[in-house]
Amino acid sequence: MRILVTGGAGFIGSHLCELLAGLGHQVTAVDNLVTGRRSNLGHLVGKDSFTFWEADVTQDAVGEGWEAIFHLASPASPVGYQRKPIETLLVNSLGTYHLLDLASASGAQFLLASSSEVYGDPPPQEHPQRETYWGNVNPVGPRSCYDEGKRFAEAITASYLKERGVDARIVRIFNTYGPRMAEDDGRIIPTFISQALHGEPITVYGDGSQTRSLCYVTNLVDGLVKAMFSPGTRGEVFNLGNPDERRVAEYAHLIRELTGSSSPVIYTPPREEEIARRRPDITKAEARLGWRPTTPLREGLAKTIEWFREASA
Ligand code: UDP
Figure 1: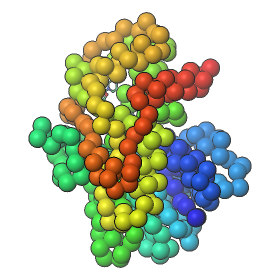
Figure 2: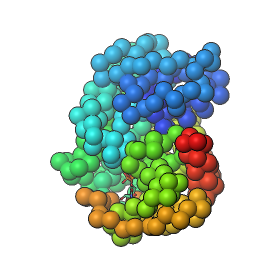
Figure 3: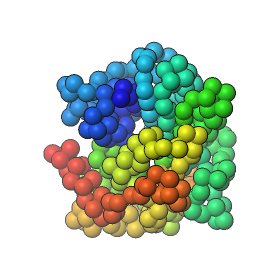
């Protein structure tokens, strides 16, 4: 198939391109490199089945005649999107609009990479989060450019489904980690690994009792492909993530142990509007896609640490 991946030079996008090219598809990645990096695609450049275009999906034409479009383009780490709030809003609104138009004109299957951030900070009775939960989001808070951007992206995708009959589905991606995360993107895993490898203090925000559930990236992209191509996914919303929920302090100590670091774990002031608990309910993805994450946390972290060691060598 001829497949377009927006955000293809990003962390998740680059793993997706690799998987799709390996499955025998003709893959074109577009990225404006605002947070993506060319080096993420180094292993694919030069292959006949792969093309990279530096382009901005909010304003540039990105080809035609696609059979499938995976729309992943957007800054995605809190540090990344808070640095570029307007671009984040525009790629999720205007960018998604352009790509849905393109999908409609091409008769392409469309997948929107949305986020667990659409749930905001869920109350205890909405834990773990199911696809049926509507969310608790501050429209003008520190995360609003991303949360509302993704919520708009979901709304316009649902509208193109209804009004134009686009063959679209929405995937809500929960915290994901693995090789090719940017060391300075501020997210928990690259930050803790980098601090541990450099012998710097591992900075837990607040008391570290907040939780996250982390999915290894190759498992996640396998889920994206299943959500696009499994029968009966048109119009559906799927959570993709790992239900293995742990406290942030536990990740700090585990990374310290796995890197063999003597870095101290320190507790710093909490992040503004911290999300207390996050864990996906993946019952639907398991039942409908036959998907579940398979890489255990220690194994995924060991691979990620190895990659960070090699990247900084
Ligand atoms: N976190 C932390 N120290 C850091 C970076 C992150 O304690 O140096 C915590 C953060 O407060 C949050 C969790 O790790 O509870 C995940 O943060 P991340 O930025 O990776 O993504 P989020 O899930 O908040 O969007």
